[in-house]
Image (cartoon, rainbow, N blue to C red):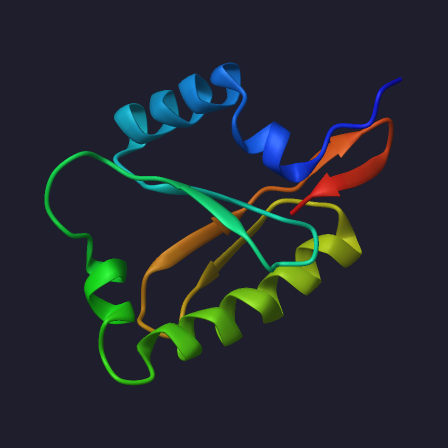
Length: 107
């Protein structure tokens, strides 16, 4: 089996269509995060700024979001299961690990 990098996975047309479907069905934005949590590909709805985007622009906002996300990503990675949690700003968020042959590929 060939190894696929995070960058290659993030660019897959099928994945983009899948995330667009999630966004259209549930009205949520989706981000694909790298295993080291150093990169993310965001699939946002077209038009206007989202609440999270506006929050990130506030002083310390992005740092608080990243801290919250990293803590919950570690939990999802250790369990290998989907996780629903309330972020520091009060929004409900989900982390769904991608699992291949029993191994967590991406959080």
